[in-house]
Image (cartoon, rainbow, N blue to C red):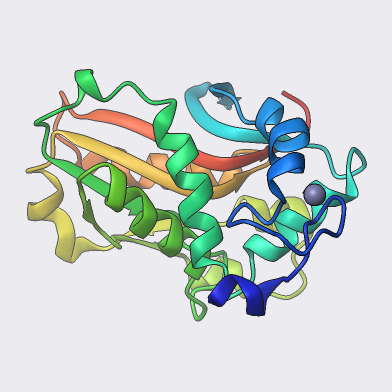
Length: 218
Ligand SMILES: [Zn+2]
């Protein structure tokens, strides 16, 4: 099983009987479950505001177990773990409103154009298993901006996002867009993605933004 290769011990107590959450059943119940809620936060950047739904809020100083979970979710072997957490996230959604709408799942690309952000791809794939939609890789981070090594962290976070023109006709057929990111911090990357997409969507298109984790001040 992949999960055994990834991490054989409960992230909280070290028990060997670890589950897909990367916790044992006791720690899942006492530590993890109370943190998994129907969270959302509104991000307002330069007059643009949007709501992001997420599953777990994470403060890096708060808990070593959570920090390790975040680190491991970035590993290449973590698909089973993503599946577990994304299923939890979908349980907090209300599918009735969106049933039957033609849906596109759009993963937010990594900030470097040469590297595929496989964890957002994992997220999209796992989401697809619980809520139907086509995965559309129609965004690309702007290499010119992203690959300059001398950028500061905040400049990097303002990396421009590009919509790939070959998707122009297809995207207009969707009635609902689910924009997917692994972790939301400042919201700059999400905002860039949102702004890049918006001109290509039909006016009545429903836009939802999902992240697994949220970090920093809400
Ligand atoms: Zn445990």
